[in-house]
Amino acid sequence: MSESTFALKDSVPFAKVASQELSYELTVPKELLKRLEDACHCLNSDANLKIRFYRDLQGLNVVEGEVSIEVQLICARCFKPYIYTLHSIFKSTPDEEKAQSLRIADKLDLIELDAEGGFDTLSYIEDCLLLEIPLICEHEDETECELKGDNWEFGAITKQDTDNPFKALEALKENFSKK
Image (cartoon, rainbow, N blue to C red):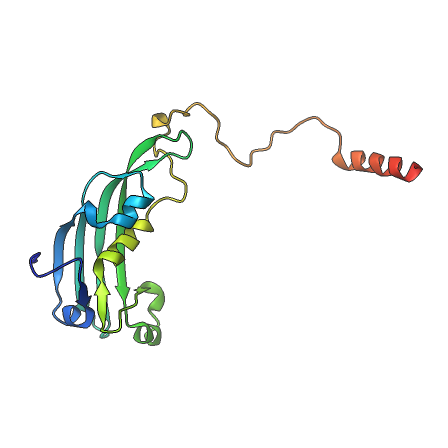
């Protein structure tokens, strides 16, 4: 594993690095993850990245690996920041036609390369992390939330002793028909 030959800021010639079966284990400085920083309250650490480019047995060029970073998100219940670890495991290929012909396109994410066959690794890694942000951000442990005692059930209907609503509509209809 080599860090010196892999530049995150540059486009990587995907077919070349896949044919060489290169793999890297490196730290991505949080300063490079601007879109992720905008989507979170704060980035607490640099991202840890393990990435591998290779050509599989069917001849597909593949990138796979995992990336994780500790961030702060804002709780949707109490509006206070809390620490959350974003962790993404990915496996993708730019060879869409071949993946479809092998009927494995649903097992891999499809990626696009630029006109020269280059792959923007940093943007891809950032996209993977952005997809891991929860849709509704809230403390994982409810005891940490300031609103821990509040009842946050949705859809629970308490039975009330009321008249049938259709009877009320019927009475209303009768009132209008008398006029």
